[in-house]
Length: 195
Image 1 (cartoon, rainbow, N blue to C red):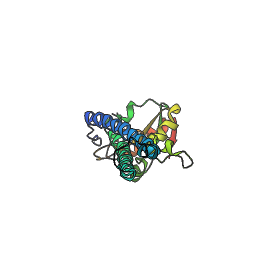
Image 2 (image 1 turned 45 degrees about the vertical axis):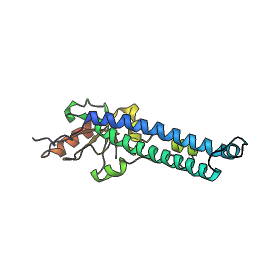
Image 3 (image 1 turned 135 degrees about the vertical axis):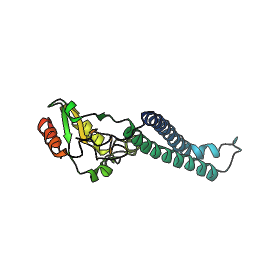
Image 4 (image 1 turned 30 degrees about the horizontal axis):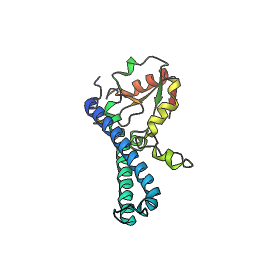
């Protein structure tokens, strides 16, 4: 029985991307906060008698640019973090190594991996600050957190994928020729099954 090859994860790259993502997130958030603060006080500053800087509209354009750059950096940080987590997600070497009743099995079509690895939107009725500070978790990662008390979320990886299709569930890769029996065994031993 030949197992599907494991993806070629690069954990040092994943950790470097994770650190870069957090640096971008902090810098982007600070840029937005500084821009908002300066825009709120721009009238008082430029109308002061000792002020000899550029006109108010030039300063306003500068700080609008700072806010835009901060927003872009923050968005890039979310995407960088998602890519980092795919490189560092844990893989299950063999389905047989999973203890019965210790995991939640996540069954889905492989075509759904692309949509479930996207960043889940924040609450629609939330404040703008909550939207800016959202965690950047994907749908699959939210599933993993939601069902964590029942066990680790485990999914079957698509054979031949260069990287795991998501980062919320640990991936296991099944034998190419006898995958049906392995899936049946995983279903029988799972504590909970998510379809």
